[in-house]
Length: 134
Image (cartoon, rainbow, N blue to C red):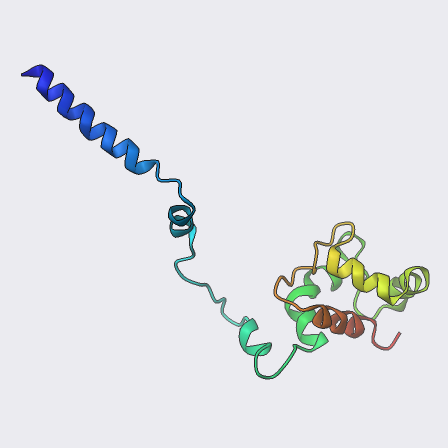
């Protein structure tokens, strides 16, 4: 009787282990797919702002993604419309290199800054906004 009970328990455990080991791509995708989305109060909906109205303005991109570092000059980031921060970079590297650095990342700045859903044109608009008037 104990032997039957032991075999029954072993069979149940084996079934549980086999089911837990489903490692197919489809099963993994199903397990890790997003179950919802998060919208922060006061945050602009990126899909709405970049949708039918076209690309976001440089000011919008700056305020949503760039201000955290470029507003205070975090880790040497050039500050908004401060010629002393921007002019040497422009003179040394040129605008095309500044754009490529923003797109690909440079020093402490990650690729595309912190705007993962920005287009390259929107990144250029943000740079243009940050150097406006210098």
